[in-house]
Length: 130
Image 1 (cartoon, rainbow, N blue to C red):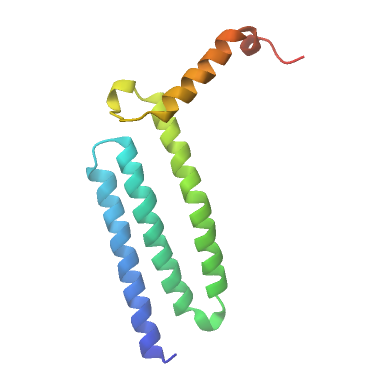
Image 2 (image 1 turned 60 degrees about the vertical axis):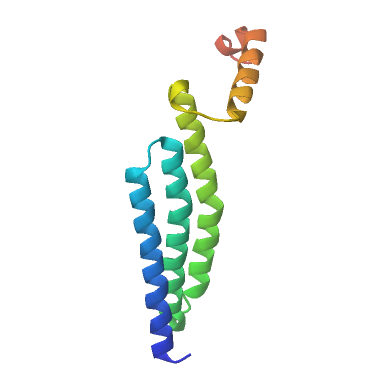
């Protein structure tokens, strides 16, 4: 690949990645509640980081950095949804329930089931396991 084409691809990918990260930052600042803010941060930031890492890998292609960038992209795609889900559950559990207007609330059923298990065996919280 000639250097002009490679540089053009790098600039386009870096620009698209920066645009996605800008949209993600604006979404975090402008969206109304925690869950929608995390949605903007999770999806747009993942796409932005992916484009920036691909641009970096192509730019340093002669140094053999593309494999590292692909490994980082895979790592980011594996860890970002887990982190976002964990933060969403923490926000759900710590925020007042009247803040969220959900059509179907899966976590309420799970929380109620966990609460009923604790009511069946209240001593399990206070006493260490034997």
